[in-house]
Image (cartoon, rainbow, N blue to C red):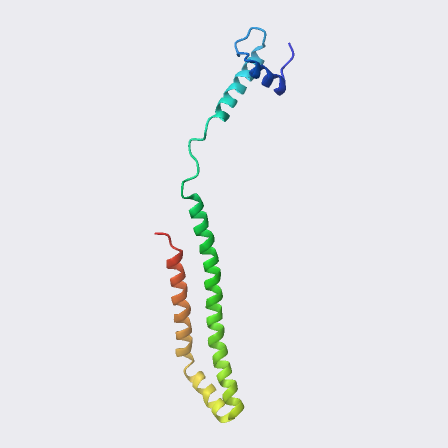
Length: 137
């Protein structure tokens, strides 16, 4: 007897033929039984599905990503404003009085470590704040 292909096996299952039929070869019986087991497994619902909070978790993660991007822009803007403010102050003082511009530049250079510490502290504070917000408790 010739081997049955997938369509013929499906037709036999739809007609209600059982695998212990005497007209089928041993290999066809095994194939028909395998098909029956496959369709029985496919007709059952999965044991585990997505958790009930899946949509909320995905939304929360997307909002966290958007907030992190927004926070990064804010951090860069704050640093740019600080540097731009110092540059604008030096430029304005140099424009009106070159001596006062030089004094301002000398003051900045002499207090450079304090300014760098303030900038590093500000960036560190923002970084730690973002890490605490990112952490899930």
